[in-house]
Length: 154
Image (cartoon, rainbow, N blue to C red):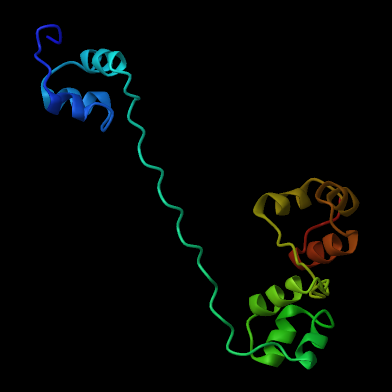
């Protein structure tokens, strides 16, 4: 197909401007014949343009800068409590505290681990000390729940 093709300047002008298969479809030849002609003429393969980088999203300017009194509160209480005091979200306080390199005050609320159905089944088979060890819980918590469930101790 490509050997008998009479190449014209318009055909040669397409080489390297599109991928070889696209040029082949336009001219009515195989991609291999386009490749051979393009390499014979020393035309480099088509390279798609590099997309322009997107503009960086600039964060919205705060409505007002942090005062020294507000900054002095950071790290003295939980981010949630400071936010409530200043009328800001926890996230806004956290962001400002992190930007300034101030360590967080840990949240003093106890982390209560709920009991799963499978864990509750253990009360029928094990003692409180064994359950506490298996589930990495405090023995007092296990005993309190056993009393609440009114299960016999093994």
